[in-house]
Image (cartoon, rainbow, N blue to C red; front, top):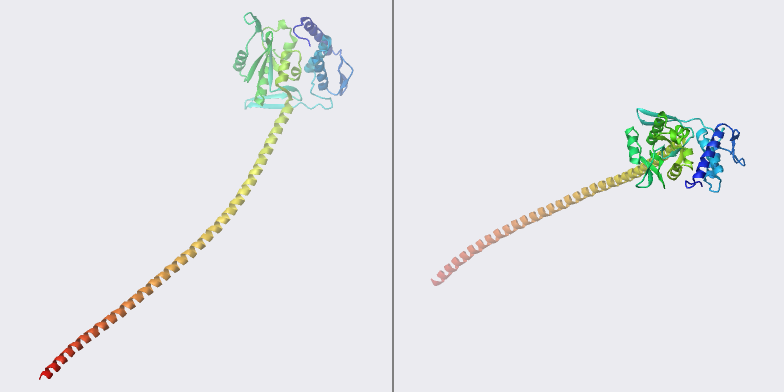
Length: 371
């Protein structure tokens, strides 16, 4: 396109861009045909339904290496004018939305109210630093300025909380631009807005930077939040960095996205809760069934134990009866044997007595026979 290796074309570009930009500011070139239709004042060959489409047309011309320096300067001026004086994200007059007041709470003592509407910001939230004065270093043969660590320390000392500071370099060394990243959360947005406002309060905002010539800016840092026109800036080095590392979002769009995510999370949690409730009900049902089964088993066990005890008692009673009968039979047999023994002893005595009597009788008979 128009690189730094062509200083003549670069000078022509700046001259023509300033000339056509002033013409746009003074109203010499007209963009709006009707309340909802726009036309490029330099091409005049196509109508556009929104300023966003017209801005994309300008970006295409700037990025086309086949275009002349004059055409690039015209459309660069148009892009700059749209970024500074128009709202490219508003599609038509009929479609304009009311300004949206967004409150971002950092803590209970800090509130930032921003009439954001549909203004495009670079997300993750970024602040562009400009006019970081560089000097030529003979040792490295590069231009060097304040490094990213020093810039970050200064911002922290002022009460801001940047996540990261990136000094932008090209083949000649460090450029006057740096990027301050504040992350993706609303706290980062709050910090970025407050930093931009601090620059504006010190007359070091974007408008101050653009209105002053290079030699009039001194050595102060200038800064502003990265927006749609910065994202589509094909001239300065920070534009490519923004396109490579970020997206364009409106505050209302980011809020809607967060709301969608929150809604999705709530729906997910509700579904999870529903599933957990179903699982709980299923588990409770299984527990109830298991409890009923266990109760039945316990009842059956009690019945079996009672039956077992009855059987044991019955067996023991039978055993006792048997032993008692055996004992009775034994006693009866003993008594019978005792009676039999006594009877036999009586007979024995009787026999002995008879035997004695018989012996006496025989002796008597024998003696009688001798006589």
